[in-house]
Image 1 (tube, each protein chain N blue to C red):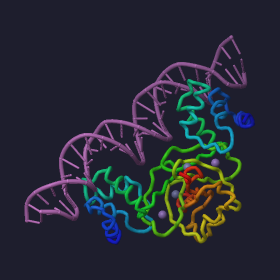
Image 2: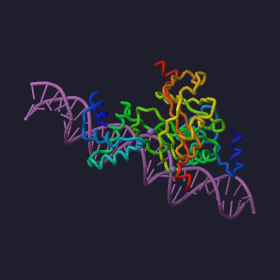
Image 3: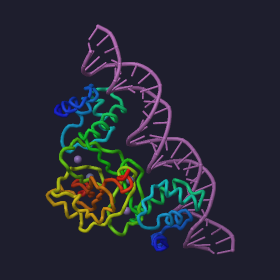
Image 4: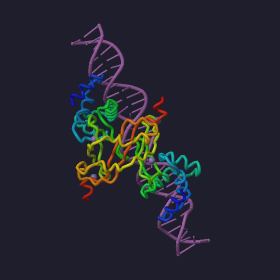
Length: 138
Length: 138
DNA sequence: TTCTTGACTTAGACTCTGTCTATTGTAGGA
DNA sequence: TCCTACAATAGACAGAGTCTAAGTCAAGAA
Ligand SMILES: [Mn+2]
Ligand SMILES: [Mn+2]
Ligand SMILES: [Zn+2]
Ligand SMILES: [Zn+2]
């Protein structure tokens, strides 16, 4: 994760305590936190950090391609530091749990040119919906 | 569309002027309106229709399976009357235009059991992102 | 090291989308 | 026609996210 901070400094980022803490919170695999969850965890380390700064920092990380924004359904967006390995999501319709999945093959290839209607297609988002083991059991 | 109204009456729906107007507005192909757009168009025909009724009616149509809810990004959900033919969406990242696409094959089949982690997967949402012809040109 | 300055952070007001409630209205059957 | 359960309404409320004005500070300059 200090790799990340180095990369960001190289891109002209000022290294502030707030940005450092947000980057630290977004560390690990299968991390899909909402902005408010990031704020709560960051505030545990740096109590005076503001919601606005968390939103700003997350937005910057997203435009730099270091974090992915995952739009769930109606609920708050989730922020995903696993931005360098393409993957998709399995979402529980009941409790909102998210798992990363890594199917083989490029889903972009499934869309023939005839079905592109002149669009320049550059990305595809696949979300599998269902019930997680816990919710299926109850 | 009066097919739709017939079906709904058969299911015990009271036919009110408001519901009729909402159903009329959601008529056609490649229709992906936000709730407020539905409200604006409905209000052109029935000026006193309320936002709450539009939300209620859309919610009912969705739970009856007559309309699909499409969560594009962090913005407002879109309502799609093309609920009886499974399809996916092509979204312009710049202007937000949406096209229906109908690729062959079942995208659910692309997720092997080993990648399901015990989830009971029942649906998959595929969104292709890129630039529409107009936006690519400018 | 201290100075300087523009980038950064903050609190809280504000917007947008959607939900809920209390009240009033009405579709459709008796 | 009358009754009543279902539906519509206005507007308060809530969650998620954006914006602004004012204060703060990281990091390069001297
Ligand atoms: Mn992920
Ligand atoms: Mn559609
Ligand atoms: Zn679950
Ligand atoms: Zn476009």
